[in-house]
Amino acid sequence: MTENGGRRQARWRGMRESVQGADTELWPDGLADVVPGGFEAAYVQFGDLYPDQQLQLQLLYGASQRAFERRTRVSARVTVVRVLGNALSDPRLGDAKANEHLTEYLDQEIADLRGRLAQDSATAVSRGLNIGLAMGSVAGLVLLVLPLLGASTCSASSA
Image (tube, rainbow, N blue to C red; front, side, top):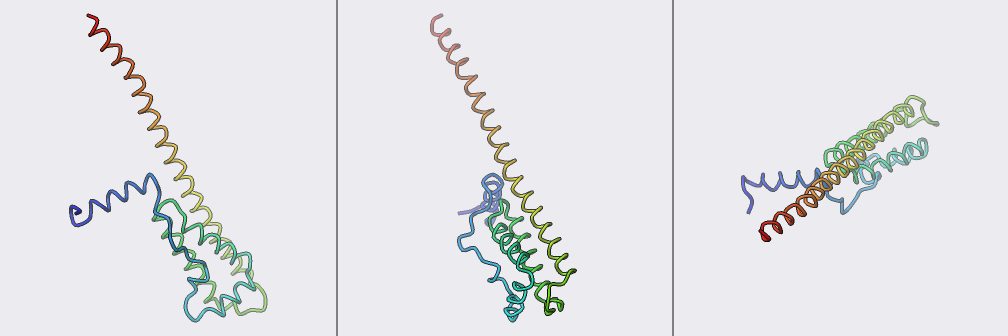
């Protein structure tokens, strides 16, 4: 039974996630899974005109599902879906060749998403190092105190 209407459990999960990261996605989605209804033909056109950007969005969508922090996962996934939606609804997608401005927009959004996911990875590494250093300090303190306690116990018993 949880206390405070389930808030204790949510607080514990938040503490655990800050150390271990968010839970693994059991059923990850692909980029094609988030295409809005009625835009399937536009998605095919998008892949034909902007194959590099489609691949990068697919990779970033996958990376967003493995991000360390839950908030980063949510914001990165929402961003990918919105960028894809913007591209699919853009009238320039119907052109015979890739549009320079749409390409620039997609490249900028992809670069921003990469940066956000790189920050998330750095956060994960930093937390791991901090926890490792803290555990090492505790272990060092225990290893320092144990011999002192042993020596004081031996001197007290011999007196």
